[in-house]
Image (tube, rainbow, N blue to C red):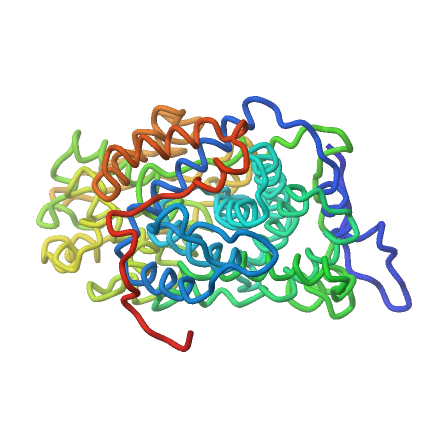
Length: 503
């Protein structure tokens, strides 16, 4: 790996393009490096994972609205169009709208892959836009795999080095440049075009983090698809000769100086050397449970604690529960967020998904977690759950914060202390989720396929599940016609739109 120092321009300085982060990312994306076998296998896993969670969300209102909007935008003249989740495989829409709608379906349940470091991310958000462009421009599976590998590489390397949330900037500001870079690799674009597209994509998708704060709305599911739609549009403009604000990261009025750590900031970003395999996707991990990633380990710990000490789930027996955890977990999904909505039984699903006290209370009582039932209004209003929920608090523990930043051995859990009314204190801890690569039951292909059949089977049926898994499993070898069929066909593929708007 090579290390790139990224800092804002100083007064009177003109930073050459070769010293800019966007150029480094673009030159990396423009170099086609062979994809190693284990990396290719993981791309297949993540495509299966995305399609699984998308299938389970097809009937949800935000997804229906996004799909309906996309239906109003037929294919453009530049290609064949892209498939829309739930529709017939040969029903085509404009690729940027397919990316938006399909991306919303993938993100709606907050149930696909994650990578946590200086920033948060769901790098699987890159898959819907890459698939859409590949279908529109008739690219084979090998090109699609190469593009996905680049997109993961860019997003994960940015996430490792640059914190957005510390400045209340939403994490999709790392997603859009990654999508633009991935499209560049997939299409074999020159570095100059990718450079301009990365800059435009970042410039147009830098927004505040209020989308994940307070009363969280369905925009949380829309935001990634919106960002990747903007990235596709950026690539299109730059292919036509348009340029970008520059230097987008390092300029005096650029992202770093004005929105992040300021004019004196400096970041060290690791990137592959020329010719070095791109392997960052292997650093990411998926979810076994439909909840914010930093809650995954706590759900597993709750299941274990309930089995050993059922009294820990009874508010009549519990005086208080304290979760000692990292700064990030405490501030994002814990009581350190200072969001009263995290304790409100009438809160949205999106808010409850970001409430560790709620998630822990339900997991302790049920010994399980379900992507629909665990968030139902009836479940959230159960009096004994509300009582247990409101006895739970998080505290920041410097040791768990340190462990959170340990790179490949990072820990995303913490220690639980349950103070019982009889004076006993129950204590346990967990470092990573069971499904994490370092966890008790790491996910492999069998687990991804089982997750797909569990989530998609009731929606799509066994025959469609077999078809999708058969295509996805051969992804690197698919021809363009087969890539065109890489989608999920719902039970009512010709249904009329159920929402209305301007389009």
